[in-house]
Amino acid sequence: MDNFILMAFIATLGTWFITALGAATVAFFKYPNPKALNLMLGFASGVMIAASFWSLLQPAIERAENSSNLPAYFVATAGFLFGAFFMWCSDKVVSFTTRRANSTQGKPNERLNRIIMLVLSITLHNIPEGLAVGVAFGALHNSTHELEGLMSAITIAIGIGLQNFPEGAAVSIPLRREGYSRKKSFLLGQASGMVEPVAGVIGAVLVVYIEVILPYALSFAAGAMILVAVHELIPECQSNQKTQPYCATTGIVLGFAVMMLLDVMLG
Image (tube, rainbow, N blue to C red; front, side):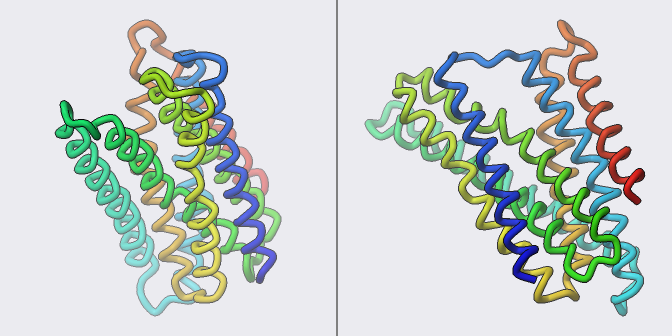
């Protein structure tokens, strides 16, 4: 059992590392390449959408049918909606703190508040993502298809890691533009991903030691991932649609196809 928790910890350390890589781009330029970022965000969106069904919702339904006293459709739907609701609440908290940061304009602590709110926004966003990775690895406990589940968990971690890269840059590059040193901008940017290993271990521990919540946890992770992909990643990667009409779309299709291929082929 401890092996799956350790794997979740290692995987979320990896997603944190990719956040740090994104933050490290501040050492090379102040403005990231928009085409590359849009393609990467699109690919991550496609991976997360496909993973939400084949790696999370489908196993949640199967496990609920075998272990839950409630109908499987109820378990999957309840967990999915709660995951999306959790992310929505996180977004509301972020919006509230951002408005407070903006309201401090003209005050001596304006700059400090804006930095805190920027890091807090990305950090809150990373909590359910870390939980999703932890749940995926924790679900390997007593899995009847361990290889398939392992590959699904790895691809989920990769998908979340890919979209963490621009998130790291989204913190460090604005800080650099405001006049902070490259070192300080990098340190604050990578710090936003530190919460993922903690959340990943918590998610893995919960599903390993409290197996009854596993179907809910899997569908919860799916709801959180779908909301992130549809509400944040897809609109963001389509920001330059007029000048690059199919760049982000190509990334979404490729990401979905790769994730679907891995899940179906190994299934």
